[in-house]
Length: 299
Image (cartoon, rainbow, N blue to C red; front, side, top):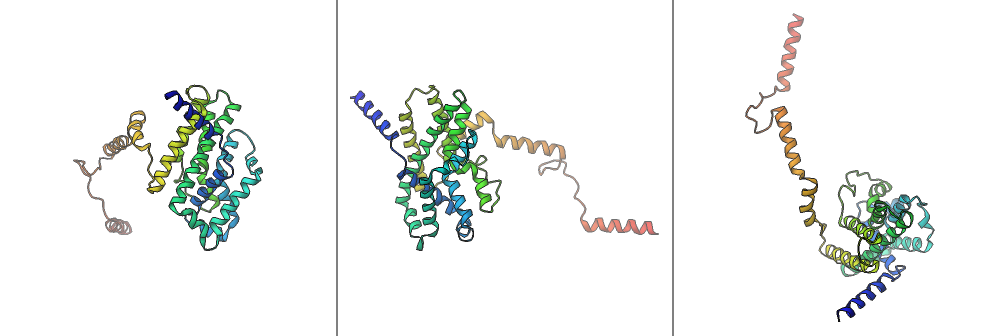
């Protein structure tokens, strides 16, 4: 019975990994990606005044992962734009979300039950892109673990790693909004998934690729649907990182406390210092003293 269930699970994973992504899953990916673009402040005004810039931003949201992966592997970054069907489909989604009369299309896809379906289908595309990206990188660099991880990571993260470039197209410059400095859950999950698929590709993880795709897709779908349904911006990795990061990289608060104590001992002007300095003279007192000196010199 256990063997039968194992066989059925393996067949299910294999069938799932062979499901074509175009057009249904790719359509869901484009809808959710361009929805996130419309959520950005000023995106609607940009589409009215500068539709070409808005269209370019939408294409970056849909195909930014392919551009970054081609850039890493030394391939033409414009190569994916030869796929006319995907470009036309993404352009149609962009037009309907931004310019549909009465915002009917936008209201339909934003309806939470419908949106959750699209979010789940987008995660299917994300995991498949990570696996395909690592397989493609392994074809060029058989022993390049870091190349495979980096390629799978940018394939799964999409435009988030190009957020500063996408903001420049919208006329916004926010260097502090760098995704590497403040990683979201999809970016972290893509990195961890890229590590797992690299281990599987190099035979260090004893599991088939189809099974890993199925298991990691179920994890991503469950987490992302839950986070979207609850409107949460937290990450399931936060609890684990709270324990692991201080052990591996030290506590940031401890370093700041040491820095503050070091600065206080040098200046001796901390609020709890036993020898507090004399109060500084005000500007009026300083100016009055300088006038007296000038009067004495004149005399």
